Image 1 (tube, rainbow, N blue to C red):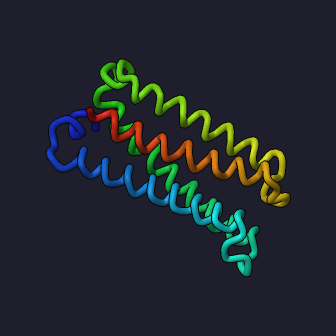
Image 2 (image 1 turned 45 degrees about the vertical axis):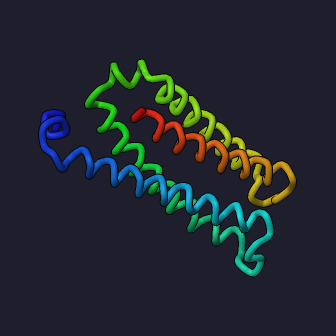
Length: 138
């Protein structure tokens, strides 16, 4: 598989597309849920929307993580020496910690100011992940 990633002209670009689609599913659904947390589309039940949005967001994360791991396998030492990549990995850990904190404290049921801060933080972290991902190429 690693040889195909390195030698076949269409495999790596296809992985990049899968990675971007995963990011779009993840970030798009988090923003949709965030809008609901901030009171937009108030007629939509927050728990039903969250169940749908988070399921799609997790699927997007799985696509991005799997494709990212395969892309990483083609040049691990170069990426580990890249500050943008290392910072991106740190941001991914921060995003995971924020998500665990959000759900552990029951923020979705509270929709309080801290829940809103957590949602804004999540979106900011994921946007920074995207920024770092693009910066890796430069």
